[in-house]
Image (cartoon, rainbow, N blue to C red; front, side, top):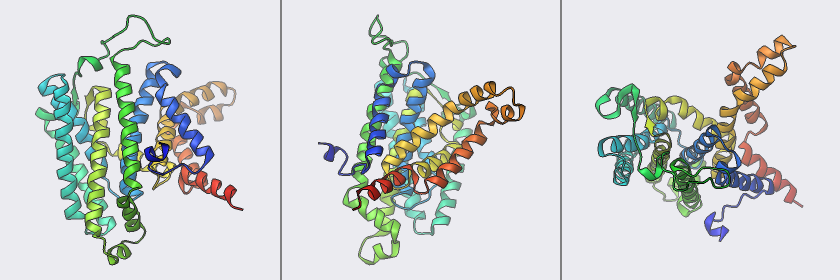
Length: 358
């Protein structure tokens, strides 16, 4: 059963398997284990970023394509939900139309970008995608009648997913069951299904060809594989998964704007998470997303505690100021790259392989 679910891609490390199980259990029971609005928001953000980063890893880690337009498709998914529910009202039909329309638009755009740009060298393709993403963000900001401009769109969701919906009068295990909690578990199930689907893709014959293209494009073409077709297909699949991640974000926030889903900062976060977790591993996307989002969300709180505890040492207290959280996040990133050059997952698998060796 597990072999079919994981598509034969086992963690290959007891420590890694334990961490993945702990993450799964932690996210599955997050509302009960970590009560509070902030903890639930962090858990939901982790779910969104797991899907977004895993879809980006399909493009970068498995196919070897550097694209800066990934957040464009992420934003299309979020705007699809926002625009449809704003125009059609908070109905399930609106959500279906929004997701369907966003997937169609992403399909066409990724197909166009792939067919017209993937024949050029990697650096030129990266520059083309950067230009396309910047143009789309500008367009989203200018079309205020449709997208709400810089202010974005705030919308309502179906009653079942609304925070005001409370099916039970009493709490369950100390937690009030409401529409927000139902939305979280909708995101959780969606994220699990999408990650398992990505595992199936990368471990299929198609995924093996993508890895062959990544290692040596000319050799793959010489033995008969149509490289442009495979790279375009990978680009399209990656865009569609990113679109679904954007829809998840919009559904959770009930708001979307240019800075929420189209900013270049999100693109940089994806790159950092892929490197931290390990390129070419879906499990790396999961672990990297958890580490990055948790550090990004709670590092300021930890620094605040350190700042207050070291008031007797002015220089150390100033260094641990919560305002310097970006500095410390950068330090953590540099250390992770230095000590885990192949990513957390790559390091764990390598260590496990050494222990198994006779």
